[in-house]
Length: 322
Image (cartoon, rainbow, N blue to C red; front, side, top):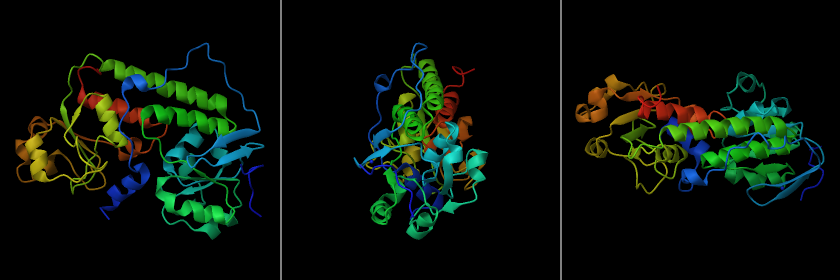
């Protein structure tokens, strides 16, 4: 029998396809001033109290009489959050892309990230099933089978990621641990943005997702970070979150810094860019300011997103981040 909360009241290249599934289309980036304020030392430490009443992004209300102890996570970002706040032992299964931290990677029971199977989920008898944008079309099918699906699309701003950490702490019975993680994230975000506060205008930047020239628009999560760091994204104005640019457009917009999220997946580097017709005229290629970046920390809205912001800041402004 399926465990339930006490009351039910809550193809492009494979790498790019995975990124699109993980991030989804997002809203326009928020200004730095709109981000929530950092918790202060006088903030009361939250304690776990049940029952907990919450609503998911569909507006579906749940009341949990006790902390969920059999969670299936279909979201790599949320999986990372759960382990970071001490709820890892409550996760009984996760999708195949949930590979951080090592404890998450060690989970033996895996579920399909796309087109997930209802019967395999039912067999695990979960008391909470977490689904995100990549499983949007499967949510109602799982609910119809009696599974307790909490729909939580990935947050689309840094501030929303911080609040997501707090929400999962509240829901899983780890509010104090979540507050520590969220406060640390907020402090590091604020510190990074303070480092670039005096920058009047950042360098032109190109963030490459694949060697077929898919990039990030302003509406994407990564694009929003570039905006907060005052970089001039050469894909600004694109009608989609993950536009495919042409080589001519990249060359014409002459990025001064290039980020390669396809360095490991497609073997891209400064040397391979030099072999692309016309690319030796690009400022970043001439100056050697071409940097491989870890795509996982940038496209999974979880605790490690601060590492991505810090890394982008250091690479954009090496003199400021010494």
